[in-house]
Image (cartoon, rainbow, N blue to C red; front, side):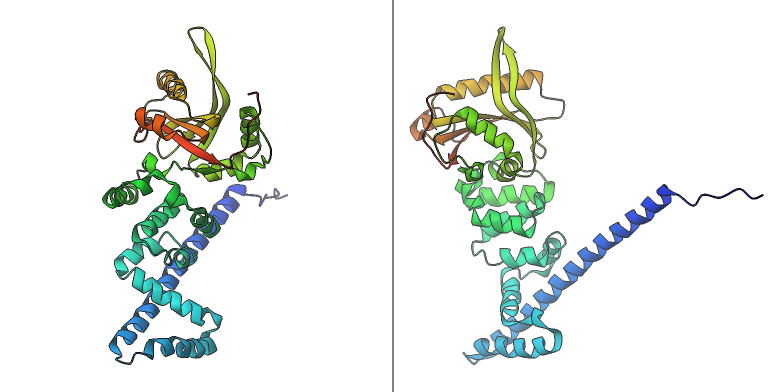
Length: 327
């Protein structure tokens, strides 16, 4: 009697599933690139036609005319609004080689949002950050709506510095702290609508950790709450400890209610030195400290030379509520 042959082969099945999924992803990327290039070329044809026609009213009439004809032939994807976006795409990115690079990593839906950012440097910021942090279209829109660029330290730097750091991120995949840390941080999702303490703030951050990391940035990985360290036989506690993958640095976060005080700097320096000596691993960069306060103290920060300190950041949090009389 022949032995019964088992057809159950999970390795074969998983291999085929992996092949199908990989191919589908690659096909989707190719379709997106071709679609974006098509839209760019349509925009180029329209722009060239408008420039080559001497009549002043030609530009106003040609898009509605094309929209009617193309929609009749190919559907609503060629409505008036979309044609205007195609024209805008070509006007904003007129070098097709640059377009090839960008559309290989961002979808047409991403670009349709980004092209309407008028400031060129701000536009470049959102392109590179969306690529680096792999933002969805929804996340991109939320970042723009929350004025992320304006809240980063890099926005306060000279234009040439911003361009250099974005170019480093694009070519070398190296991101600077000035592109990551924000001021202020929006913590309204915590739901603290009354007086609260530092413990309350810390607890709510842990409860809403996913949202907190979203506000901080996607490369943050949570490590510990109330990280205990012992110095001179005394216990000290770091409120929150994270690791940032792109910076390759531990990030210690100290939560403070009320105004920043000078003593917070020395406290953070102590934490960072301990982390450097006891937790930092080979290949990692120096730890970074983030002091989150309800309110900055600009003169103290200036005199303590913290404005351009690469290792300690002092940032505001919003919303700002009254404090309880306990910690």
